[in-house]
Image (cartoon, rainbow, N blue to C red; front, top):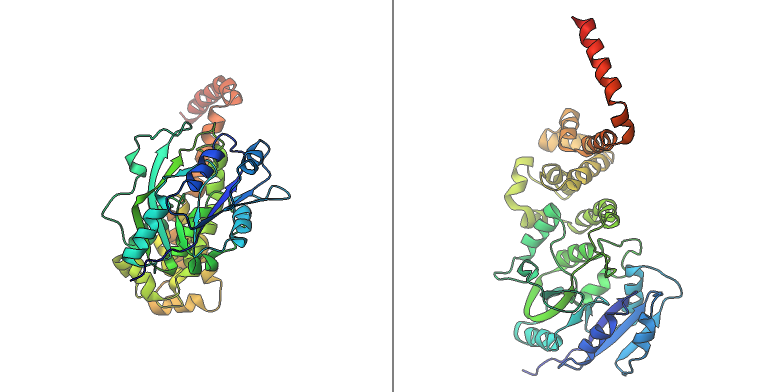
Length: 367
């Protein structure tokens, strides 16, 4: 059989990575597999990133620049609009590939076929200087999980997959592009959900992507700062909605969640949102999931004759719905934060003696 030599489009959305962008570009131009195109769209960097990209001359490199700052997803949309490849892969403007990255991918599809929606490479964490870090938890390990196992974990525990170097079959990519321009933190989470619901994934342990570990100093959007946590809080419900959009049959729901569903009854095509909501509300280790579940259940009960349907099929009544409030800790958490903030405030400390006197007076009156 003749070996396939597909055209691979490598997309980079660059922004303020003047210290790293050349390393990433050179890692691509040095690939041992040469049938590729490199498409870089700069999102109006305020440093010398664009200048450094333009200084590199290669007929396989195509450079574009946004007229104004648009964000990651919009910039990737622009890059994808220029891509001609049979497969699409992404590289952060601060990351870089092993020189054999594309070669190992092509070897894999020639040996195992290309009927996968997405291929995940090995992730090698590096520091700002490009030195490998001893963080094996980030590395790909066998045995590989199944598609349904990954989807279940994505739903219950959040995003545990990496996106640097992920390779997407063009047919699958066309179904998820354009990406939502307002999403920032969870753009890869949403892509994983959509791709894995389309078809099977594959893992490429020999294809290596060197991933710059986020720090506040390297301008990485995944840095563990307050802004990132706020974005996660806001975007998680939006991401979880893609399970509602993507799971169309009770059979698919059962494939993913299996016996977890049995305590709620037998799902139907119409009651899939109810089952996803109940699964979310029973989550104990993901605070945002029950909040999404309750909102999903509210929306489901408000449509058509769903109250009657749930009662007929599962004996679910409003008192059962009301009891599920106990599964959501949003208000309790908020009030606890308020209490801790106030008790650590200067006004609380200053008024402490007054409160103590008031308590003593109250005790005296009650005697």
